[in-house]
Length: 479
Image (cartoon, rainbow, N blue to C red; front, side, top):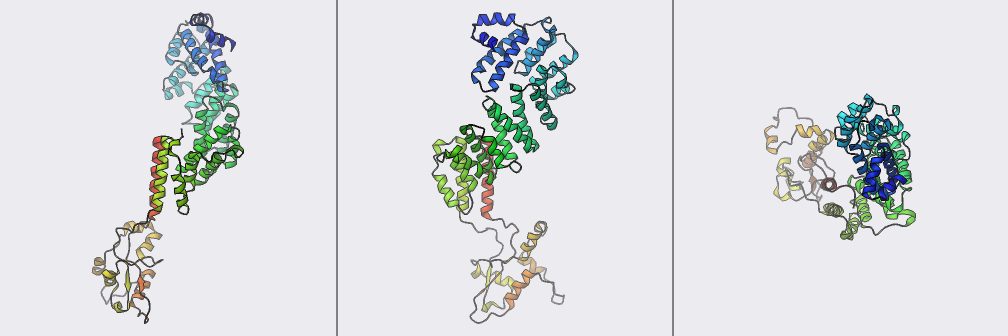
C-alpha cells in the first residue's frame, strides 16, 4: 500500500522510472491492495486504482519473454486482465510468453472473456479447477468462471463463487462474488441463499462503490421471492444499513411492488420508509405518499386515495415518478367513473303486465315501451349460465337471434323439448295470470354476450398494464 501511495504521489517522471524498475507482480500486488481498500468503502483510493492500471498496462506492454519466465509475473498478467485490464495488452503479452500449456489456456480464456466472447471463454476455462492453481490466480479464475456460468448452470456458478470467497476473503473478489450470488440465488428461487448472501454483503461491503449494483439485485430479489422470504427477514437485513440507505431500499421495494400489484409487500415497504428508523420517519416525502397510495387503492377508499394523490408535490418527484403519479390518478379516475351500459346488448329487458298475458316471450321482448327497464336482479339467461360453467361453450355456441329461433321451432306434433330451469321460470311467469293489483313482473333479459367482465375491473387491469409499461420504459429505481 505504501508503495502504491508513493507511486501515486510521485511525479510522472518518477512514476515512469519506478514502473520500469518494478516487476509486474509487484505492481499488480499494489493494485490488489488498493482494490481491497475500495471494496471496504475507501472511495478516495479510486484515482489510485486508475493510475496503477495505467502503469501496469505500460509495464506489461513493454515486458519481454524473459520477464514472463518468472511464474509470478505471468500470473500477475492474468490477474491484471481479470482486474479490469486491457485485453489487447494481455493478448499481446501472452503471445510473447513461454510458459506451461495450462497457463496459456487460461490466458486465452481470459482474453476471450474480456473481449465479450463468453462461449469461447467457457470452453477454454471449463477443464481448469480454480482450487488446483495458486490461490492468487485461483480466486479470480473462480470468479470469472462463476460469472460465465450464471445463466447456463447457476448451481455450479454458486459453487464457484463460494470457492472465490474461500480463496480470497475480505477482498474485492469476495465483494464481487457475494454481489453476484445475490442475483443468482434470487433467479434460482433460493430464498435462504439469497438472504444469507445479502446479509454477508451488507455486513462487510455496504459502502463499496459497487453497492448500488447489490441494491438493484436485492430489490429485484425481494420482488421475485416475495412469497418465500418473510418481511421479518427483510427487516433484519435492512436494519444493518444506515437509515438513509434503508429508506431508499424500502422506497424502491414499495415502488416495484406497487407496480407489480403486490399490495401487501408494497404496504409493508411504504410503511417502513414512512416510519423510518426509530420512528424518525419521512411522512412528508412525496415518494412514500405515492407508493403507499398505489398499494392501498381499492374501490372502497378511492376517494381518500385520490385526494392524497392530489396533494403530492410533483416538483419533488423525478420525471419517472411524475409519470407514475399521472398513471395512478388515471386509475383512480377510472374507478370513480360511472359504469357505462354495454353498447352491444341484443335485446332490451321487458315487463309482462296484465294486459300482455297473451303475448309470447319474443313479442314481449320486442315491446318498445320496455326498452329502459333493468333486468331482473340475480336472474341469469340459460346461455350465460352454461357459459359460466364451461367457457368453451360460449365460443362454440354463439347466441341465436330471435328470428332464427322462430325458424328452428319444433312442429306442434313433436314432443316438447326439456326446458332448462332459467327458461322454464321465465315462461311460467309470462303464462301465469297476475293477481289483481299486482306489481308488474320483470322478465329475465334475452341471452346476452358471454363477456360479462366488470367494467371497473377491466379499467383497473388496463391501467395497471399501462403502469407496468411506464415502469419498464423509465426504469425501476427512483432518482
